[in-house]
Amino acid sequence: KQEVTQIPAALSVPEGENLVLNCSFTDSAIYNLQWFRQDPGKGLTSLLLIQSSQREQTSGRLNASLDKSSGRSTLYIAASQPGDSATYLCAVRPTGTASKLTFGTGTRLQVTL
Amino acid sequence: EPEVTQTPSHQVTQMGQEVILRCVPISNHLYFYWYRQILGQKVEFLVSFYNNEISEKSEIFDDQFSVERPDGSNFTLKIRSTKLEDSAMYFCASRYGGSVDEQFFGPGTRLTVL
Image (cartoon, rainbow over all chains, first blue to last red):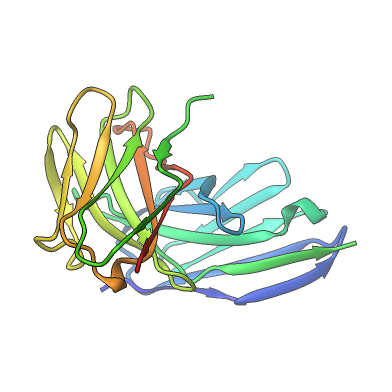
């Protein structure tokens, strides 16, 4: 059974810092990995999707990497801003016909002024 | 930009009552999902739906749950007889399919069972 873990559970950084969020998964037989942002009491906003054949994806100040064989992904946020404060979730989709996502525990990020 | 919408945003019901949560997926998407998130816990998969039938479901999705696509735009989740432990945020998601693999989520319906 796939287990997805995110470290750290919470992180507070001053504005302008670069930071890295970690995601690990136990079963490397994944089709893709998706990073989401969740604001308190709100839905999930998709940030980046990395296919299993890719090593990284970039969108603006965000860069996600994937090392499938070691069961790890990182989300790098450059020049953090207070508006980046949210919970960040990673989710993996298995190989095969199933397309359900298995989510991690999340990292709650606070960027302070 | 197209988005997934859900109604209502908050539903309060008494234990044992039936509830229907509604979703309008992105219009040209072919795959539909329901997930839930109990307060303070992980987002959990409930069910996936494709070509007018359930393609996968989790152990949570028992006989009390059902899904339907009654027309070309709506996708519903029905809980027949709600329990206290059904209180959660329910998220609908959709995906186009093929090489476009991203799942897009709605804002959620907060279900409170009293």
